[in-house]
Length: 245
Image (tube, rainbow, N blue to C red; front, side, top):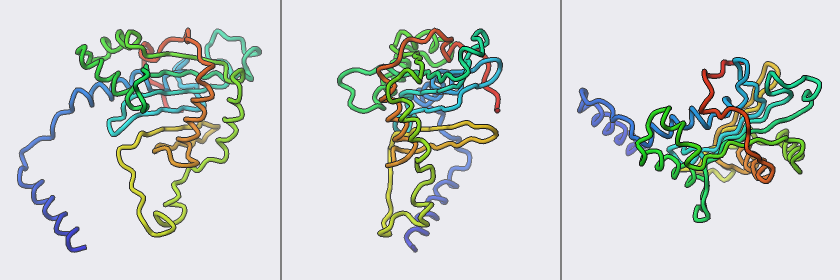
């Protein structure tokens, strides 16, 4: 404990030694990754109709500490455009996905997002307009499917009711039963949000057993053979931002 205190004091002393020094500016990797996630891989944009986000389920998979954009999925109930007759789509579930391209030599999901960001930087694409033009050329897929028509998708959706939304180290009042500490570093992150009437549930974390992150990966695998190119406006070409519900 004394060593920890000494370390803290030492670090504080080093930080105060250069009071006039400003923070390092963000790197191109940080700038482009954040922009691509916001303009293209934000699932709240996938069903942005009539000035609001109409999605009921949102998933975003990002890789490593940089949050490299890997894939995002959104699912919406009922009519997803103003042109659809209500009586024809009231019981419908529509899923949309955006995904960075992959190659046979990529054995980790994060490599897809990292390759996309590096490709944009190599083309000096660090602002919205240029990135929007390049995303389709770099193999980014904008896809859609009728959820109910996809085999086993409804079964996997039903599993969401039994997921562990609360970390076990919190619910069990400790890190692990044996008293040891479970440390996770440089892990991919999955954000999962369910929207309901006047309530919502959100999880963001690594692929822990029984977590919404693992469920999201299972859902993505079930939907994989069902995707078709979407005719909806790609998220990077949508105007405005979703308002809070």
